[in-house]
Image (tube, rainbow, N blue to C red; front, side, top):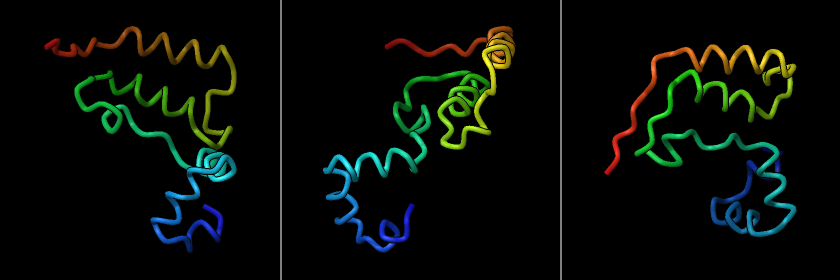
Length: 88
């Protein structure tokens, strides 16, 4: 967060999110929700979760650096034990 965002009251942060500039500023700095935060009912293999979160990392140095690296990581995830999600 920038210095002005740190000083904002939580209500002001909410108002800032309602502007295009506020939304873009928050999007550029705030990490995305984890799968569990977005939907606790869905179970995703931990390795796949980690890979997706690395792909969404704000710091480009922490993301996969090439398609080849991404392919290798996806292949490793594919060969792991599956996680079954209950169907209601």
